Amino acid sequence: MSETGREPPPYAERVLDVVDRIPAGKVMSYGDVAEYLGEGGPRQVGRVMSLWGGAVPWWRVIRADGTPAAGLEAECLARWRAEGTPTRGARADMRTARWDGRE
Image (cartoon, rainbow, N blue to C red; front, side, top):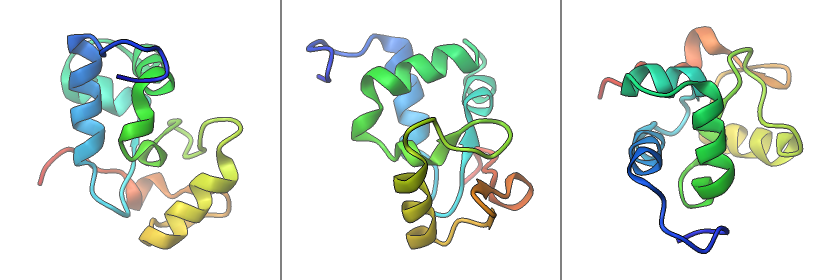
């Protein structure tokens, strides 16, 4: 359950499963997650993350330009530093930090 007080629907479970598998030091954009699943889009993934993302490594899902979600920048940057995520200033370096979903 989550802040919503209810269980996530099947699509949300699939999104959360992908996010949970992103390795430390890597990131995916909201659109990358949707593309990997072959369903939904960046907004749908963002909605899932806002409602149920607290139980998974949410800081590894970011905007396509490498920036974290608004209001979470400081915590996200601290977690990236701790994990060794490649950055360029206050953004993840999408060229080297992006995870393609392969183990």
